[in-house]
Length: 138
View (tube, rainbow, N blue to C red):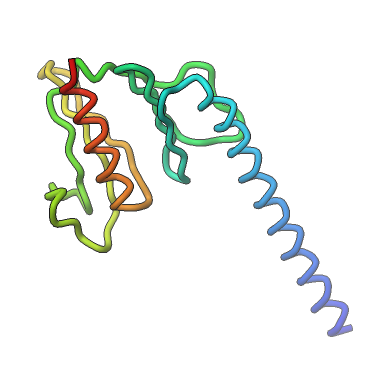
């Protein structure tokens, strides 16, 4: 009886892991199809970002991406900053741990800032540099 319960619990764990893997695979496939239209794109567990020209499209990854994700133009952005644990961070001296977020502040004072989460601080810093250079170019 005890062995049966042990193997049954292992079987349940196996099915949960298999479902979790299938679910993540479906998210990656939806992202792959979505990202084909962009010049540059990023996927992680917290957010997806696509850049086409100076237009940024972003959202939360899911198995079925909605047809209309939020968008904004880099021309409307006043400042792009990297926040780690909700504190402004110097790109030259990055912390080793924390929750990185890219914050976009807009020229219009009545438009609220947009925060896009990342999993890795180094990757977020590279995106801040890339997007800031893109914003400043022509």
